[in-house]
Length: 160
Image 1: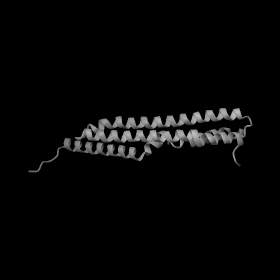
Image 2: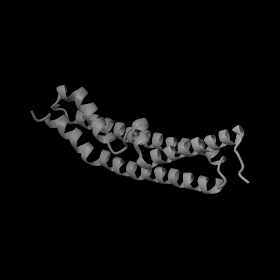
Image 3: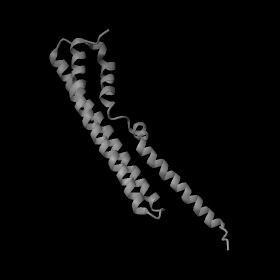
Image 4: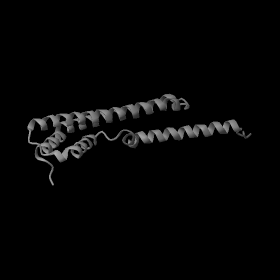
């Protein structure tokens, strides 16, 4: 005996298919990290972007003969670099938490809710760990090559 689906069963199946597809898209976006870069910017690119901003605004004044002015400028630039890195990392961490929070009601529609939640939490934890590792690298760049580049540009000017 063959059972025919009624309209309610069909709507339920379409709804489940839609929810599954949306969850799959969310997971792919997290895995690819593309959503992070667009929404928050790249953590690792912050030192270069801050350097470009400082040089774009101040290069016309370089070289500056007063070493104390260059020291103050360098300290301010390094501080701005660290702030940009921290803000970008915080944005990415918040985004990962937000996607996890949004995934919870989606997972509630599945038979294996706990497996869905475990997978989503694992992805979010991985994204947060990646953000922390990238922030550590970028902060080191703020104190390393970035600091040297801004100090050198201030004292010696930019090469023509």
